[in-house]
Length: 234
Image (cartoon, rainbow, N blue to C red; front, top):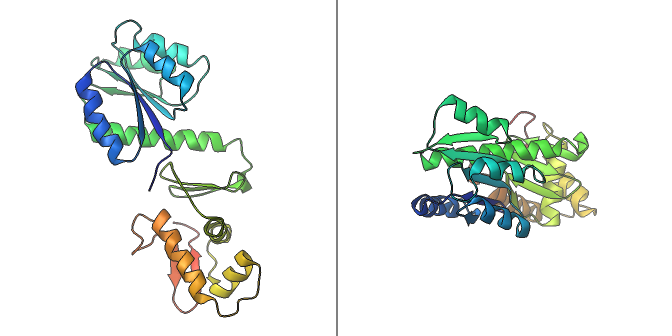
């Protein structure tokens, strides 16, 4: 699954940057780097960034000053990194615009989890400005009917128009078992005409894109002999 998510890692410790490059590449995130605050601001001028990981102690412009400048025009999540672990340092970082705080040395898997958590929170915050009927959330799956976008665990999934229409139809009718002929007539807008294979193929491709395990789907369930459904509570 290709991710449209961009992370900006601002840290002057090359070992940390190299380490996190491995983890972000594994998650298919795009990673931008900067070694001080001014470089970070330059990156923001030229790139869309979804989450910033910002070291506190850096040369030229430290993380605190950098965060204050970023907050003048940007609202993406900022996660502070710092060797300082006292509560007063955490409070200072969070009070000037940080969203989270991770102490050095840190577990890379914990930092990845914090990044994903902030992505989910920020995405839901942005969705609040949309009409509730235009955004459907099913666990980590978010369907935006207005923009025709779908994300899974905060990562955008590219669907064909037919796949999006099927997913939206199932999600809009959560808890209802929809037969293949009903799905076909709704999505293709024509009589069913024994087109079971067409629906099945599209459902299979859709599962491959949105399910963690397409062989054991948790979102789109098969009701044998009838059709498909998305449970009212997933």
